[in-house]
Amino acid sequence: MFMELVSQKKPPYWNLVADVGGTNARFGLAPQTGRNFNAIEDIQVLRCADYKNIQSVVNAYLERLPLTKRKEIQEACVAVAGPTEGDRVEVTNLSWVFSKSVVAEQTGLSRFAVINDFSALALACPQLRSEDKILIGDVREDGGVMDSLGRLAVIGPGTGLGVCGVLATGKSYLALPCEGGHATISPVTDEECSLYNFLKSDFPHVSAEHFLSGRGIENIYRGLGALRGIPPTFTQAEEIGAAALNRTCEQARDAVIMFCNLLGTFVGDVVLTLGARNGVYLGGGILPMLKPLLLESDFENRVRSKGVMSSYVANTPIELVVHPFPALIGASFFLSQKY
Image (cartoon, rainbow, N blue to C red):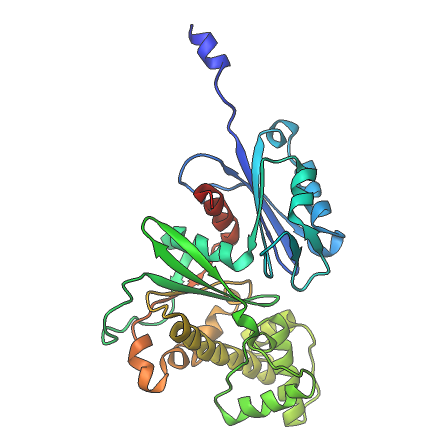
């Protein structure tokens, strides 16, 4: 009898979870049962430039898995940069366009969900362990009553600038995706205003993403050089960030500090707009590397300097996400909710 029961035991079914950004596609497998959304296995990172479309990169990941595990995958949730309403999806900062229904048919899975990448990050943030996030600055005690609706904001500079709201709904969370990264930037200092005017010659609409992203760091550095009459030494955001951290280039350091300051203003604006007084999570691939300069900059003061509304944002906690694959956690959580 015992042997018969063992033979009828169901296999450990898996969900495929993925985070497809402008540069990399991150994949993993999440257990279909249980509430430990951090338990992601078989994580792999593939370069999007090496694949022609979403189908090919999904297939490349599946082919790297053992056949037995591949057969146990039942559902999938893929987070992508850009809007995901409707069947047709265009991935921002990539040339990939695909149909959800076509990919679902090709994969043969019972469910193929596609959500915004910052919706996935937003859903992950409340699930993060304490070691996966770092409190930035002080939480002041003179800011009044916190929001009773449990509203949060998630903001992350990377290849682009992602923004998402989060609303607590009983024991679950609802992501409020948006395209806030394409809102117009708000310069504060005279030099920031001069840089804004400089970029207007290149872009008819100067958005927050033109400053607060990897490309944004490059724009700031290039613009400061033009305004100061200094030829650029670097062209890539990684080079500029490294020179700023190592203090080998004053202009690179000034560019990163301005990036952090402008981010502070933008974060404060998002808190005011969403009413996200319960907290802000900073995600994306850039900020963990630039943490020393983020702390050195005027970031926190810029978040909380909102004139007559300064008290409104005074005690909003700000946490830096340092988990390497948070969107995979969010994708796993999304599938568990059966939206």
